[in-house]
Image (spheres, helix red, strand yellow):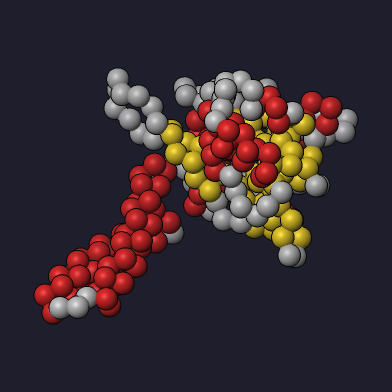
Length: 239
């Protein structure tokens, strides 16, 4: 059986079992399937047109294709290649595609870099919510990496554990998905603090009066103290 691939990236190249591979004849999905139902904005349609070369299903992970039990929340995971025309990852496109299915999705976006193919993995993950509240999702991008160093490892006894592990691999470069949501929340807080640090450093440098300079400096020190503490905690938990 010829399996689905995009520029050589396939289920097998990612290290997934042959039983998960999608046949080539069923792999490529027409882009119009994602731009006609439901109706989308002209801006999003333009992003599909200018950013996406091809959309290819590479693998289907579920009980029956891999030796894991069904999960309470996750029942299957699709691994999809998104061939890109530019290096920029169109996050709104990935959000839209992922929202069209209830299954988990691991995106492998692929573009041609200066030294070869570059893959940037991504996942759209539900945020922790209280019972009775509407579920919200966040798209997480992993770090770009060469195609020949892009792989996925199957870890977990059931689909819930497997999904958490895959999300951890994409977002944190580790297979342990334990307490992942807390770790992602810390990472997002760190990113926010770094942005605040840069802004406050600029405010401090541009301050015209001693009072304004001291105020900016005090805020900057507070941000840096929290950033140092969270970074240390995050490094410890990742070891």
